[in-house]
Length: 288
Image (cartoon, rainbow, N blue to C red; front, side):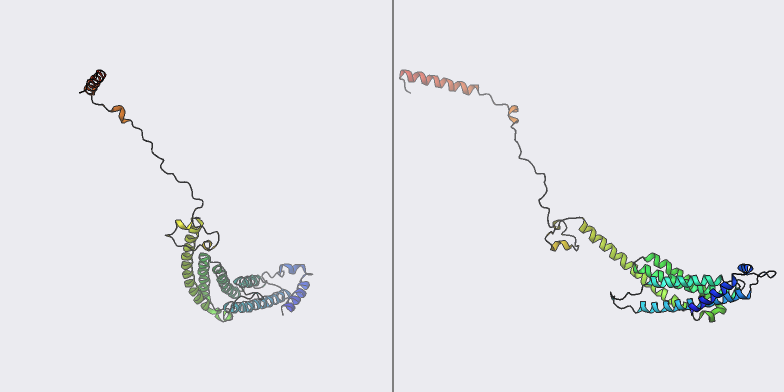
């Protein structure tokens, strides 16, 4: 169907080329009016863009179901990711911008309003899956901001829908998205708190191991060190490092220089006298 639309649009475009005045899509003397041929071109373009939007929307729904029902990873089959949905919603939003630029519909306020509401719906879903991709890489603050943006878009749709509810009923349910976002925000906050605790514990244990302290110096601290069960376990410092020790003391007897000895002259004289007398008596044979 899209191929047939492209062929028909090409034929109409070829018919528009010969008439130079039709390039501005305005008839002489009738400002604000467009030719019937240009209306036909806009109509065919509208069919093509609307069909492309429906196709991409159905593809997005299929990917959403696949994301919710993900099986264990299989190397032979690529599992869907939130980035795939983001790309689809980018294409849908670009198609909606092209719808707003169709010649002949600039004055249709109802059409402009309807396309604006549809744009908000798809922007909300695009933001939601961008937030999901941030959650996968544990960027909690960015994901939380995007979830708040989703709620902002969804609330704008609910407040401005009014008479356009029938035209929006075929679009993804915004109220269901609001409920899901609120649930995801609670899970996100809990995961952020748990991840912060785990990161702190991991940082502490890793810092303890990175200190390269041997086991003998960290008996009081528990940390998982896989190297302890290997042949290169760091148990003690070897060879041990040098340590200062006290040297052998040297004793100097300096007190003798300040000692005053008692006088011994009297004892020396008596000894000398008794010694001489005995000597003389020994010579002359006198014995006591």
